[in-house]
Image (cartoon, rainbow, N blue to C red; front, side, top):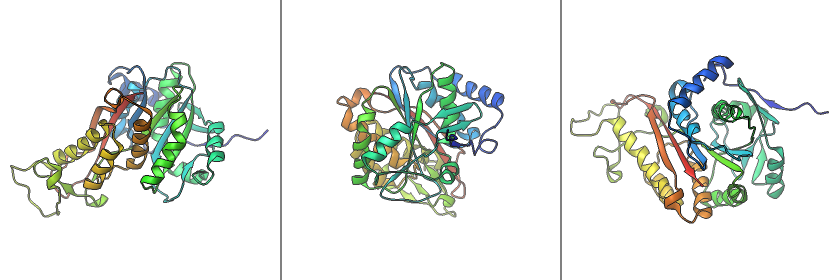
Amino acid sequence: MTKPVIRSASHAGIWYTSNPETLNSQIARFLNSATEKVPGARVVVGPHAGYTYSGSILGKTYRTLDTTGIERVFIMGPSHHVYFKGCVLTTDCDYYDTPLGKLQVDKDVINELIEDDPKLFKRMSLEVDEDEHSFEMHMPFLQKVTNDLGIHPKIIPIMVSATDENFEKRIAKSLKPYFEDKSNAFIISTDFCHWGSRFSYVSYTPTGALTDIENVSKSKQLSNSQLPIYKSIEFLDRSAMKAMSTGSYRSFKDYMYLTDNTICGAKPLGILMLLMQDSISDTSKHALKWNGYAQSSSVVSPRDSSVSYASGYAVV
């Protein structure tokens, strides 16, 4: 019998605690401080930073997730360490390990996707898999909210790198039958604005309008009548959320073209917008709603930096 391939919890002990009891208690606190579960919410959006920064927002993400009847979970996230084009990558592992236990990969669905289009869906190496954190940071939360209920859905990680609109439409077309199956949940792993010179993004709106975005230099002094930078960052992020809440893929793409906001999961979010737009007739009822937002620090000087985190969900 072939020994199962297990993706280790490679960031445990670095980005979050590797102690099972401590981690279980910490996640329970994050979940208990959040809003109640939203019936029918099988699409959620949440961050992937260290839990010191994003744990409370991830608690809101997973508190809303309705796991009733869910048999598998698709999780789409960006690639932080490798660049690739013309395909998306999925895991070749049998399990994802966490300090709270293992989550089984749905190899049957992955094989279906690859057999249907072997140029579009490809397997990543174990090294690439374990280097990436965008899936791993969600796994303990998913393990906690499902294992506590005695259910064990299988996972399908999908890593996205270079795309264009035609490519995103191809991915959405392949995933559409799974999205329309109510036994599947979809998770988008993304942080929001990465602001500061170290991220090569210093866009700023002094008035809170998308029409007057400018780049600020480290030496610029803001007047009292202008928005603090952290407020400008929040405005940019909430404008992205508003665009996605319309249910329109085009609105979100236009927003990204206008602002170049450094939302690392913008491409997985675009694929999600296509899936929702093409599968849901009443987008006003089933569009993304947002229930959490935070920043790693409140930027007041152009020399500072921060990363933003948001939690969203949709009943579909």
